[in-house]
Image: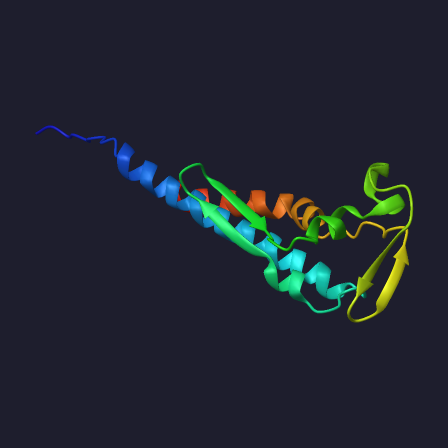
Length: 142
């Protein structure tokens, strides 16, 4: 009587499971970055209406395995990078300017300092996101 063991390669099944694991990790990672970006803005004493905070959303593209955290608010880059003489890297306008605000009337400013919220949310979570990917992929390989 012969003893026999068969090894069968289920590459397509494993490949699909890996794709799903990557997608789960992307969703978890982008949700974490989104939550932290919103938390940073919540902690900010400069938040006026919460519109920017409420506009931060996530998008997953499974076709190229990317997760994106974004906002479509026009003034978001000015908050993130600053404006005028205060702008990050000295890239802002060098002279003061005046504008009208319905809430505050005429305002003259030289700009405001950067208040990064997206980059710290991303950078502070790099290790956590790596662990999320490892955790999800381990589920497939164990």
